[in-house]
Image 1 (spheres, helix red, strand yellow):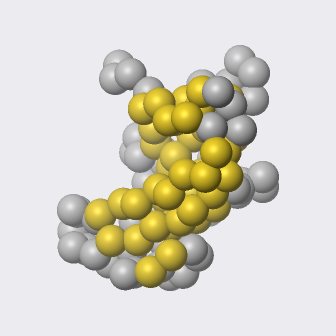
Image 2 (cartoon, helix red, strand yellow):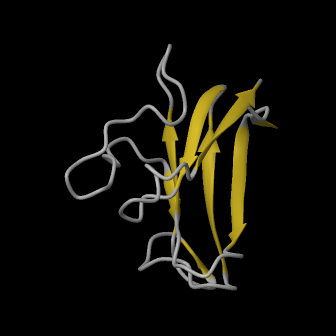
Length: 108
């Protein structure tokens, strides 16, 4: 298991480059106490609930929500994070179940 990335609390820009062949996205969701990255319930549509999302990078060559990040392109979102644990995940159908998630720890 890899160690979670750590950033200080405050304004954080999550910038991602899609180095894969498929379209992807990154959603920022808080992790509740005792919850581990990769444990969210997956719906029949192959996606997890985005309720409580703090931000999304899914606009090819732009910031915020869109139709996904095309192969070879970058996207970003800027969010204000309080100390705690967060999950960064790809919510394209089937991608979360395939392991496309990571934990982000935010310190004081």
